[in-house]
Image 1 (cartoon, rainbow, N blue to C red):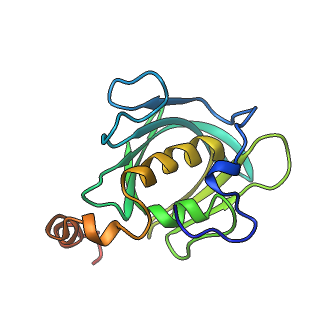
Image 2 (image 1 turned 60 degrees about the vertical axis):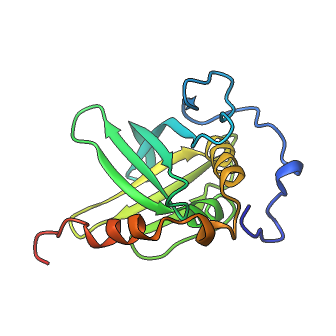
Length: 179
């Protein structure tokens, strides 16, 4: 687990969420129990909503993937009902910290939604051409991130990181128009 601020609950202190925002299908290598199979990277399929005009409105499917060979980031593929899927790579620690307070700067920001019965976080993604805000279920993301930290604990990332793959992913990124 990442280092928590004083207001963040320890993993064993968390209560099971009663109400969930969005619909989530936990996919753990054909497992239906909602638990990751031992040693297998977890995937989370989650119904999120794109925020338009300050109101969560447009449903979007999101798939969160974790690769233990590149443990510092998670991949999130957003698939709207109409349109092309888009994949973003987000810092795992940034996403975790965003469950409890404002996290990130620049192109990726995450923060919890305060108030109301729904436990949610908002994710802001910004590119040179556009930006989008998504509302996501905090309990579902927290449970999924906990599963990733059981596979690769915080602080162990450099030991398990496949540096060739990690650097290759950074260096082989497609150029953006105008670069």
